Length: 65
Image 1 (cartoon, rainbow, N blue to C red):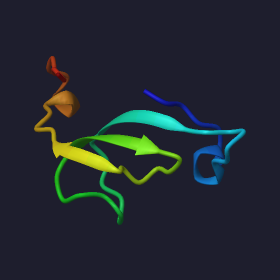
Image 2 (image 1 turned 120 degrees about the horizontal axis):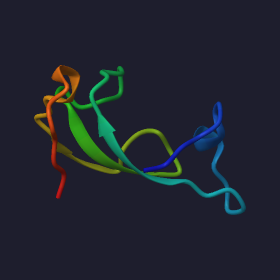
Image 3 (image 1 turned 180 degrees about the horizontal axis):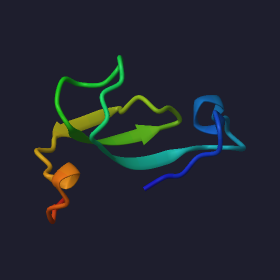
């Protein structure tokens, strides 16, 4: 997982690269239509993602593999 401060992930450079695995349950305008797991490289927009049918909002155990 990657953590950012403010917009640092949006302003990635060679000296400040950014890589993250995201487990996304919040819908943004640039997101796929369903909850998903994604790989983010130098951006908050995933370069690859798969649908992740999570019950995390209901407090249930979830898996990723």
